Length: 104
Image 1 (cartoon, rainbow, N blue to C red):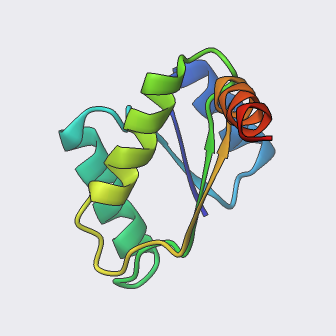
Image 2: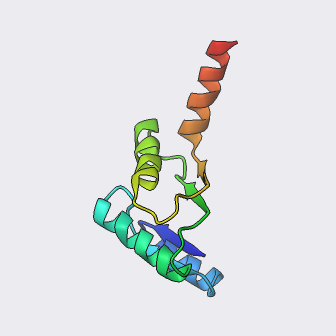
């Protein structure tokens, strides 16, 4: 289990709550930091990439930022591409809901 956040306070809370997991202060929109996440995951998982990546946007990022985040994850040079990316984002939900209404 590897978790990331851009907030040191969130990392501290996560470390207290889940002491057996590893947490990194990383911004996945910065290529060098995304590469750090990849290498940490691969070393923690004995040379493999995570099979599932969960992204919690906290609902405060516009849809373009959400999509950039997912693109960064998908475009990273993993040894094995993750089979699933789960995204929790209010803006993504609202955007998809609106698109679905338009198609009806």
